[in-house]
Length: 188
Image (cartoon, rainbow, N blue to C red):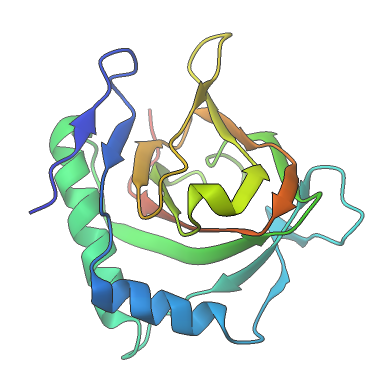
């Protein structure tokens, strides 16, 4: 059973160690080995290599028989985290695998707003060993001082989608991460 660790200094940010089991990690590795990478987008706009807001590529994990188990495991984790958040959730929306190469980044942003106003909980899972790259820190801003999340392989971080966050530029290596969102009625 996965038990979230609640950060005392940031009660709305949850750490899950050993987030995925071997089956999920094998499936994710299979997806990462494909040539389905495309430039990621911001809102409804697909980004190009020269973008000023975001520079990364991704794979969209479509829901199908092959991905069913991955979706089920992510859903279970969102439900476990929601025992603390206590939001009204309806579904898991969008699962992406991100690939950052040297120079790639994602400037400070929220995961909620515009055409994604129903996102409630954001998930980031580290898929690269922390010793295989430098830079590309994921910073969460709950105050003026950012909280840099763990780079430990297979650690999942869940937080409210209204929390400002960023991925700083990658300096060396390649970084992979999985992101997903739990959705529900928009916040009021």
